[in-house]
Length: 530
Image 1 (tube, helix red, strand yellow):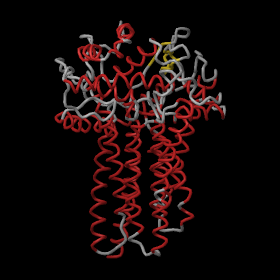
Image 2 (cartoon, rainbow, N blue to C red):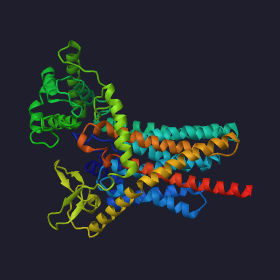
Image 3 (cartoon, rainbow, N blue to C red):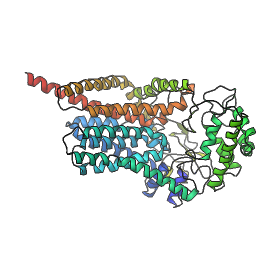
Image 4 (tube, rainbow, N blue to C red):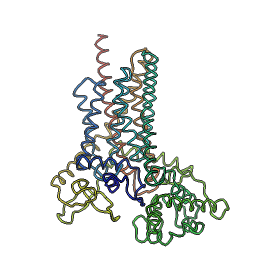
């Protein structure tokens, strides 16, 4: 992604086609290129992005709570999060911007909910912001789809609120149509990226893993039945051997494939390839075989021929096929029973570890050979395909392609701060969880009473809170599809669930606002009765 950003800055889109070019959507590389264009070190730009997102959230909630102190408490809840100082914020990778994007998208839709009864001009800034950030989220990482689902749900809530108010019918229709703009922009953004990829590489797609021959080959391989029964192995070595025998074209890269497997960490003790790594080994082997030679159309034709040969083998019965549900080439082939296991796992370990911050202090370390100090660690692939330890500031301090190793005097203090904040959050997690959920259900009861009494209520805001919990859960389900299979993980890795923590913080922030409102309403009613 770093090298792709360098290509964008050089005006050559994602560069000459190779196995890296269409591995990921281009949104994160575009963001890195923007930071580099503005001459902003990555760590500074990353921090500013999240702080600005938090300030926007503070600005949005000003109409929901009048107390300045409550607003400051809410601001601190969303601003200070231990996960931002873990691998989530310490690695140059697309998932790291999930927390900031979550804040920006949720803030935009809360603002639309609050402002929807005002003039249409007051909605325009938030329609524009939601359009930008909903599209950016999908173009950065396609499994940020839980944010898109939240946007859909929030839009429905806002439209229902519009048609229950006393505004003119024509005005309500116009506002409802405007709420569709973010999804139109999302559609057009995807088509634009596909068109640019078509222009440069001849493939109308976002990545090689979406609507391409390579995706079809991955699906074929995962459907091959074999005697090895291990859910964490998507494609067994036995399945690969049968595929090589069934596809002469795939067999061309077999020597390179086997060479790639020598001494790699992603192999299990029994020699099987763990999880989705099978797909990367195919790409690496094909690259060594000269298949990724700058011509994406020829590469796609190569994999299309493999797909045709494997499907023919399935049809004539020479290749055993199993019944599995395949959502994407990066997710496991699932049986019906495993879907239930994933849902249970996503709640018992995924969601629970978010709500309790049980893994919030995790941070990767690397020992610097020159100074012996401990630093946050990220992996970056250089131009030669070598994985390098690199501090996140290096993105502009030495250029997009540079590598620098130097001492940051604040690092040791930063690690102390991380440990302190993580312990504090874990200590307060259960009390906060109990209070937030209690307020959530008390607020529902208050809304029902107000609806019965035909009084002004906040049921729509309550539903938005529910949407936050559902989005949090969906995020953990997506991650659980890979990681529930690996027992030693013990939960969803914090790196892939960083946005869930932000969703929970927003939920707690709204719970604080609603608690203050309920207490104020109770005191006012008590005074009126006296």
